[in-house]
Image (cartoon, rainbow, N blue to C red):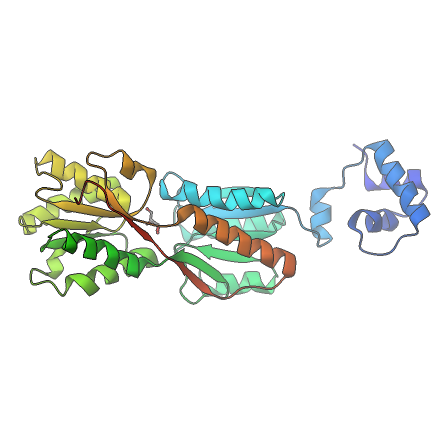
Length: 329
Ligand code: RIB
């Protein structure tokens, strides 16, 4: 494979001149530039992408680090990021952090060495100092969904607290009085905000009790076990607001296993708007996040920063949409 030295030798110029022609970093006499381009074509020279990166040029690659792509919430997020990046001719590298700080920081360290142009991270472990360090190295970053509340970068998520209130209010409007909440891991800001939204409404109900809240670990099995605990404590529960759709699906499963009719005896509302909610029996009412749009917006903001070098420091909360289905009506 031809090297930059072969091109310089054939064109009769220095390696530095060839580099200037490739990276357009400085004026080169048109005749000389022509000789260099001719030599590149003749040798079918491929400039080393890493070398171009080293010259401060863009690699055309962005890194997307998500907790777990097996959770059906994240593929739509990734698709939104990739569709925007692809339109701009960029490639997306995906990594699963499993919400582990060490795995996430290892990805960041390795991918920085590969001169990626920027990071989009859904993280509940990244710290302010990690974001600051990337800023000092002039590496663009955008945080998605789970993430810091006061980051020195753009943070994009749904309005989780308002969304929870919408879900609980819907259950009340459907006649529920004893409304329970299955909440996600409280280390995630998304789960914390939804619990706060639930409490803001539910505390106004005569049937409210803190024991109506139970942890569900953001997964199906967690939702199923949570309902078993709830029904032991409060057999008269008539409404369940699940902090994400996977726990809502688990709740439907547990109620079905006990022969409890949904929505006649207990109404269930989830949160996220993943495709699975359309195929459960009954179909699951949910508070849908604009997942694909969140991914697209994150990519647009990152690309703006890559191109302009100007970092957006703001928290952007997108509106959610109630999708009523048979599990509540
Ligand atoms: O289902 C995964 C959950 O984690 C979603 O609700 C999403 O908001 C993320 O926080």
